[in-house]
Length: 181
Image (cartoon, rainbow, N blue to C red):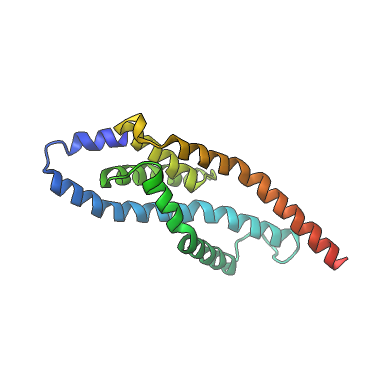
């Protein structure tokens, strides 16, 4: 929908200027996605840490300590810096060959969805949201332009993530329990 609206708005403009405009616009929309990612994903992590601190009596009230905020911000920044480029490559090239207009539309849509969810207090996955937006903009070009096998691989990875994380958590608990008992 966003791509169709954008094409309608810029239909009479020179293509060269439109592409340059969307390249610059993508810098802004990428910043908006990063901001919305931080407001949503960091909240989940900070909430879990704060709840654990409260339950174990390390803090007297359920209020996020400054050091938790800073640690979560640092962890998200490090994770994005280390693994972010692989995700960007998958999202920008393997699903659908994004052009500036498509990237602009996908990032704008994702930022709006993630920010809206944050305002409502709903946890959403940034990766799932941006993926869905990229599949959407790719589909506006034509359905065959999207590499649906990549979609299947992403969904498989998403489905396996929770049981894998639970298994690692259980094994870690079991190992630590053996060591300290």
